[in-house]
Length: 250
Image (tube, rainbow, N blue to C red; front, side, top):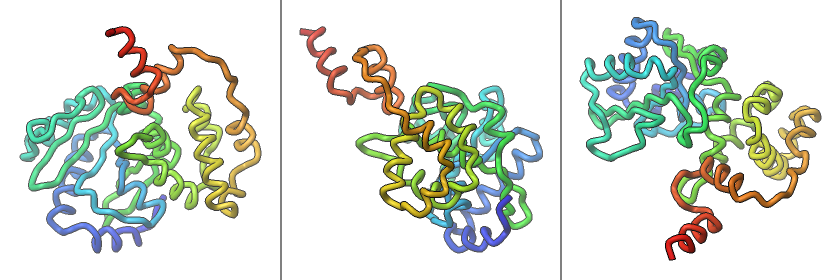
């Protein structure tokens, strides 16, 4: 649970018209009893105290609830952002109204997994001016951000700040188990974080550090390379894959 002092910062940073747009949608979701949790900049700020007005709000919902949420937005005057800027509809629906954006997220951007009930059930509670707002737990926020490691965007800085604030409270076994074969990515983040902030990093349980820093077996496997490169960015970026396509086309 995160206390109501958070609202003062939100009120100072986010313009009134934008706040009203978001709280209207939050109220509609509650009335419709659609399970959800808020992620993105608002969730990160609630844990770290670091604010940025991104002009959007990220809602995580179960895939089966996507259409119901989209219908609520449409009835409230929000339109599909696809007409302004095309996007991948396989994991997100983007709605816009008055220059603001709402992202309805139901899967990972890399299509590796969908939003599960545990994402919703494990949400923390945020008091937002008498509105009880569920926000992604730190563990699920890490899962949402860990694959965003691209030339034009990297969310690992957000994870560093999250660890600085909540490393001691994190349920490490849960996030490690849910990441599965991608757990070494978190291991890389933890090692960089330990270099960056040795004091806060010392709060990470030694058992978790041991699991995360176990050496990865070295074995050349082109299929594994392709699968893992796609987890970071579905667009062509990894040199061996690009060279392979060029040689096949020659």
